[in-house]
Length: 288
Image (tube, rainbow, N blue to C red; front, side):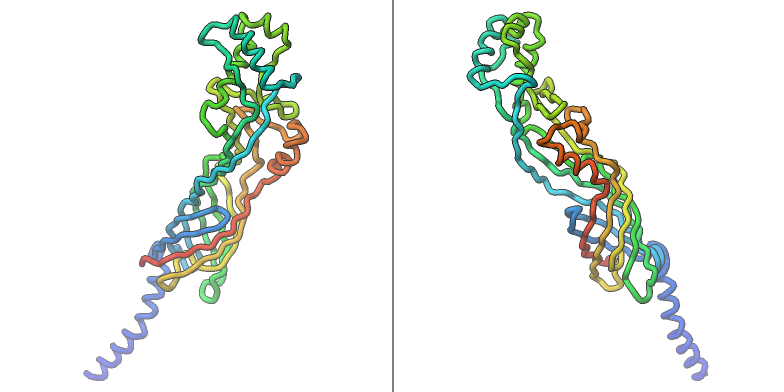
């Protein structure tokens, strides 16, 4: 009897590691939660084990509210104007315009704008471990999903270009045509090479750089989606494929070769960037 008990005890001990190993390979048997920092800003994600060869990560990359300031000169296509000239012309126009169509006596000479990166996007990634028992090296594929707008450019204060809009409306007002033609007055806006960009009816100029909202991802790195211990880390290097960027201003697409010398180099570079580099470091904790 004692011999049988000893045999069963040894059998139990030998079977326990095998059962644990099989259990460890079950899909969704482990769950982790992590935070990451890198070129995609701050990331929050959850992860799980699919098999010893595959891990799954899903989450969102949050871009901080960052506003850069800049200025663009306002003018007309064929007219060099000074603030004093505008006041003189505005006075003449107001003599023939109704009260609700009056043109302000002062015009902004430049558009003060905010430039805001908008890279917040969700992601779903699959890690492949070719040597799961000897190395944490992994290959990764998946996608990032965002709104499509990666940079937003807007005048700093909502409606700050309404004086310009009022002026441009006066240029088309039948009651003001005599004054317009006598002084050869022109609409005011941004003059960028072949493009003339006027504020909209709300006194705003809205520009944005757009890419594909669905951005496939390929990369490689080290570290596991869910660590074997309680805490682990993961390093990733790869690229998002986001297509050919488009520069849109008030709904109109600008071609890099038609914006003039001032912005030609900038837009030429932007239009050629079809991939976004991803470098990230992830700290992950194993929940179970």
